[in-house]
Length: 462
Image 1: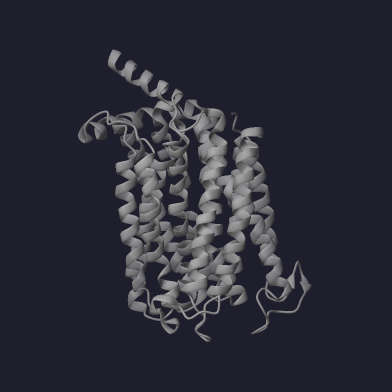
Image 2: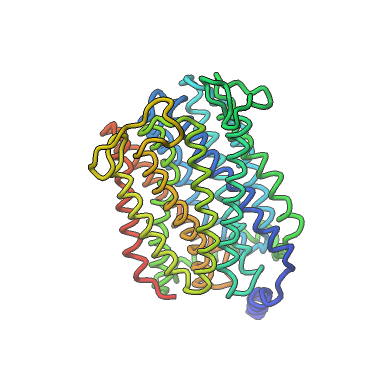
């Protein structure tokens, strides 16, 4: 008992001495390193490419991508709490980040095989996507768990928001690189900047779109290095075998006590619901635009850059609002903005805006020239501005509610609630889209997730 008490005291006391600014900035570069996975693969480049070029049609592609995302989310949900508990017991974070980061990089590089119009490649491509998703999400669990050791409690919100903002900037830069120098219009053979694709990438086989996945992996390898080199890690407490046993024992204890902590319980369930809606919205926003407006990679990628700029501003301001007003209020405001935006999107198609007839997009009509495209772009900016603060404030609220000596374990539970039903959003979108053959009907299910999450969040007391 004395040893356990001393260990607990040392963990509690450690955050009173914080590392230098260079270590904090280096930690933030994890978000920069990981963001291209979300920007290039899951949202703006590879996912729409898969739906429109690899799958037989956009609705089928949306459905298959949803099923693959659901399968990866289920694995993440089941394993995250256990891994977080083991990491708390062992004291180390970086080895876990390195191991799962390697899985992400390997999966992302294999995704290069996804040639257009080849049904035989669909299953291995989706499996590689699943591995990449599992790797980057698990690595994020352990990176988040380092936050309380980096800055004082009253600066956690700004650290979280600034990390998300830096991540968005990385996403913007990666999109500019792909769109400006790699992905070309198959008709003209030119990129967004009017250039011939670099590296001899063939526009006819969409090599510029496909390379976005390997680029995400390479980007992670390069830009995660500052965190490994300059950000301190916890010292190892016990051997790996003992860490597994201690971690599992601690997890059972935490789960048995969780119903006694009503605010934590309410927050974790709320996070489970609204995160599912947010992830699904981001994952299928580009696919929905490709099917609704017929946007190509350059148009979707440009849309992504605009959203990422809005997201950068939103995440940075959200961090300041978090420290000033508390994370719960930031989360509530973000959900309300997302709910309003998704309802508005459902009332827009090629020829109508809120039941009012407008001129449809025409070939060669210019970038976002049609009224409906402009409306979709504006609503996308609102979603971008709300998404960053919602995710940043959520991990801040978790830190404020969780015991500091079990922070990785609770981040594991946080990942669990963010993933345990994460397969439900994509699965419901996939099923409804498949049954109705309507992308709009599939996207409509997201309204339920935001309404449900908002209702449960009201029960959380900081």
